[in-house]
Length: 160
Length: 250
Figure 1 (cartoon, chains in turn orange, brown):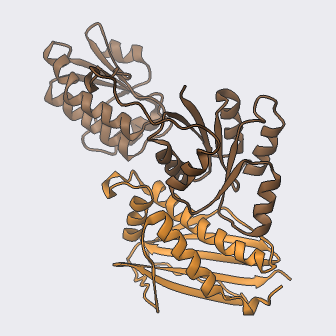
Figure 2 (figure 1 turned 180 degrees about the vertical axis):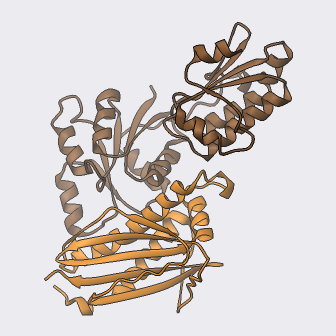
Figure 3 (figure 1 turned 90 degrees about the vertical axis):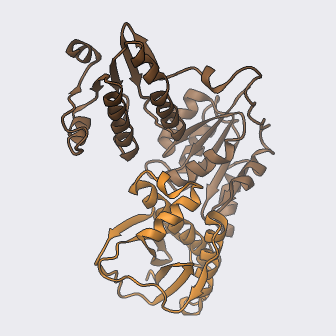
């Protein structure tokens, strides 16, 4: 079993995000330093999955509303004005988060950290901050699918 | 014979992707949101193939699969498992469950179809037979009773159905109104919930009725009545609870 602090979480996330965006959305994700902006008043959506077992943690994916709509249209192969409502968008973000989380979970399990994934949850709105504390490790990865940006955070610690 | 495909996944996104993948083929698609729904549909429809997600609320894919294997009429239905997890242990566990194949998310629809072709014979959807045109398609949701046009929306409202209704409003409804049938009953009782597409459709029907001077009566429940009050165009529209009440009001 690898030590948690030696796990290359950034590499895990990079591969997972690239795979999901390429395969399901036909989008190329470019990884950038500190590119994601979440200014007050700008509505955004956060998809979250948790995992628990030998390790515990959370994975969040944050995108702004406009990007979430584009992602929904891309994954469902429809025009933007064909999107029926927020539920479709929430479902897409939840599923994207589920797939990224599933990929990460697989790599953790292969590294000896058996765990199970939760069902995704969604938070949306504007003017809020996401903070998650007391973890052993936190990795944050900003990415861009021009012209939009997003952020994926993973928080992890051993169970005992 | 038309194949029956059952897709069971709590994600509507995945169900839509699966549906789109099978669209070019002669298939009837059924959907379940969890293992309990999936089992009920499998018992009722006896599908030729099941595409089954693992992680679902209420009853997960593994539990549903165990129950399928315990039913004589269902145990031989081929199952393709969907999973977001590609780890060794997960794959080994899936194989032990006795599924025919599995797919790791993310996947493209073509990849799913490629796997499916190893299990069932997919036939392309037939093109329209010669001589049969769009206008000959049976009007599933419309009828005329005496001098009243009746439009009854089904429980599941797909984009195709909305397009069919929209087309009817532009053509046959105008003809019926010109022929003196200037009463319309719009029955929404079967709809389990209201969404923006339905509201748009109601407003479209209302505007068409105004245009053709057709008297409109809507049948629905109290929730619909409250929703319609939110819109200027439909705030004054009464909603009747039964067809009889609506007819009597004419």
